[in-house]
Length: 470
Image (cartoon, rainbow, N blue to C red; front, side, top):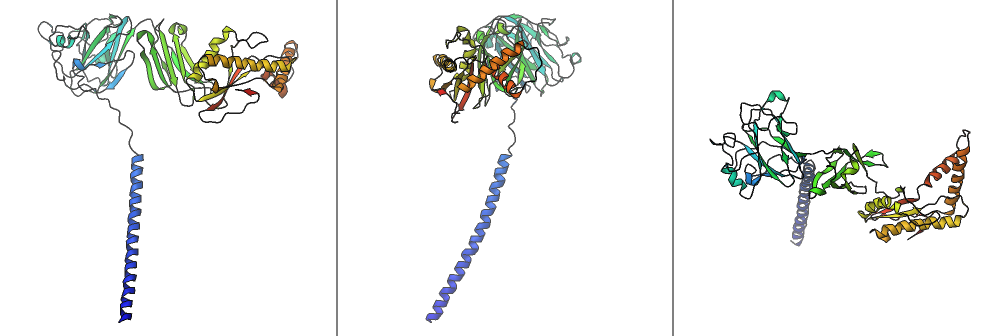
């Protein structure tokens, strides 16, 4: 009996183990399936579609009270066509004012502030010639402006309710107001739509423009407002001198005379024209990953005769060197002369915006090797003088190391100077050796009295340079 019970216990344990193994296998398959499902889910998430661009007009922009504010010189749109008249019927013609919209069909309201005196221009580009847009232009009066429009107590200063002349322009026609326009208003559907003649506007004035599409379900439009003055529009580009190529930047240009109005603002500027008003002051910011950002404040008169404005984007890489020309010292000394300020301040601005960068200033002297020890000391003191200039203008001295020419460099510079002097009097064509070419390059360096080397960017280790001091 005892043996029988023992046998039963053994069999029970065997079956229990088999059942556990079976469950474990099932669980493993389930886990594998779950893992595959997870991978598919992650793959699906990785292949998510690109974000959809929203071209819809802002909510309530059908009404005067919620007019969309336009930035002069910046295109708004393309945007979807307006739908409906909004909550309020702001405009409705009557017997005394038959040249208004008979009523609002599908409207959108815009407003803008005049940045400076000039002639108002705007262009409304339609996406489809089948649309039938009309517009009214109002000058803002006071806080009761919207209510007075509803009661026809404020009247438009420009009207275009003519039939669309699709024959005058291929594709999607445009309408608006231009300096060379021929008519002041179009107040009848029997007239074809065309550009109206510009009106003179003054800085600080506010205008409202209401656009109405008679046909429902339109294809949309874009609009650009500008003030016509005797401005100039040079091509603005950003140049990498190391790579010898133009680069794309994140750009912002502010017009200081108009309360820092942005005249260019984009994260993807490659090349384009910018409108500058003569005599106005502008501030330019440009940045790109891996480069020193550019900050410039300038009066536009500096560029009146330029068709291209090319700003230098210097690479921000360890080991990159920048020879600084136009730096002047008293002969045989390390005393900086006032004419050096402009060139050095360009580098002050460059490094000031990038506290993560450390750099070395190396001084040079033209020499014939008469007193190498004195030349070495003067070259070092010139670097120190430039460092002091940087520190006085807000750069932390901990970021700057200095170096002068070592004895070997003095010797090479002297040889180069003698070679350069001798070559001037020689009339023979002598094939230059590699050594002579090297000496010629060294002679060229004599004119670069200061050279700046990037020693580290962020947490990178400092690049060792001989004959350096902190």
